[in-house]
Length: 76
Image 1 (cartoon, rainbow, N blue to C red):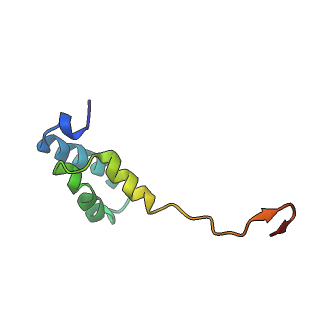
Image 2 (image 1 turned 60 degrees about the vertical axis):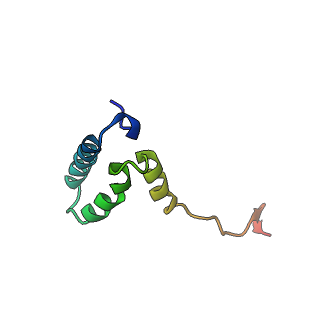
């Protein structure tokens, strides 16, 4: 089953998100439910694909490597 916007109706996208978030609720106390609901609203509305939303979310968790360069046993 495709979850792409072009292959789903708004109602189907609502169900896809609800089912996924329902599975998430089993592993936590529901603290992130509001965040997740609003996070996927653009998908439900047909504005962004799930892949785009998830990539944007993960981008916020990447770290820059600001450590000094190492050369051999010491720092440069």
